[in-house]
Length: 624
Image (cartoon, rainbow, N blue to C red):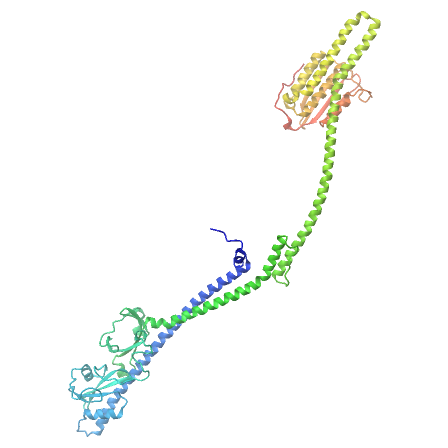
């Protein structure tokens, strides 16, 4: 997938909720508006749909009740007319005269001219008089209307009966006519009309398509269709209730029934004019297709949905406009902060006002001022630090130079001490021998060869010591074996050379000591032993090396010689001075305990950490 080009990113950035708080607010408002609009539309639409449906059902129920009442009144009025005509005829006749059916027909026609048509048949079923298209004197004794009309009032449709143009007929009525003695004298048939609306009762509305209009019929007590569509007449109502548990037949409430391949809403009401009419068990029934029932409810729900969506869209637009306007100041503050962050501006443009955006801008401005001040202070401190670093660098360079010079001086002092310890002693011995040879040549020339041999031996011994010193400068035996073994070898050579008696002791811990300080301790011990050999006139020497519980390494050298006064001045002699210098170099303490004719005791104490000891070991308590 290719990335969007840089030129198109700013165009989408304004609507990208990940990069704009205003876009996030707009999308939030749009989402909430759509959610609330759809929810409200569904909720209000369902309520309106239910209410409209209930109103439609209630209206259908009222229409059915009204139709049943009016139909009952119409039937009752026709029956009353027949009875009234019979009584009028009987009142005009003598008591021994029998009323004639033709006279009754004339009375009905004179009293009720609004009847569409009237027909009168005698007790044998022959038509006597009629305003309809029936043929007089015709035999209808087997007609349904006549057979049923002999037994009581009958409601239905008479085949071939005429219809007045522009009137909606409910059906045809047949009723028996009795004389004063109660004998049947004939049957009167009349047409019942519905004059309240031009299309009742077959249709309650002006819908051109009868399939979507409410239709009406009249049922008897057995559910047979007395008046209704031709396809249903004289047949039982065959629709199956969809919710039989409601008991709509008992409560009189409309209910949905399955008729053929469609669902219809059915409402029934009895003819309720008089008790004698109600006793017939006739019912008026209205039914509507399900699509017709829900049509207005669905239309209202759909209208509510679109109104809600339009209101939601208007809310989205107003919310987006308001969110853009409310976040405009925050956007400007963000752009100002970003410009400062990119070094395109020096200061933040603080918005006016006292709201949160203004407070945030002032807080950012204060933080930026504090950062500038701290940056200036850091720059000043950095400059001062650089200056001090330069000064310290020069000081370190000076100290390094002095340290190199001090190292050179220390090396010179070391060489001077080594020369003092070797060549100076040897030269002094040779000088003493030369002086002695001069005196001997003047006084005893015969002894001169022997003394020359002695002088040669002294010179040879001095050369040997010089070579030994040079070897020690080049080779570091202390680092390899430890201080204990090195002191032991040096003490053995001392005893072999001088013929004195003595003891050497070193504990295991101190014998392992072998860093650079051990070399200095070894040279101090060598210098002390040479002084013992040349100046102390001792017969016994003791050397001991041990560690104390305080973590100190102690080197002790004792002799039983003539001793000396340590405070007396000795021009040209640097033995003790050299010893102190070497001890100071390693941080050791040098103490000299001596007095004339009391021997000499020298102690060198050095603070040593346990890790400084080497692994070399020598036997302790060795006596030489």
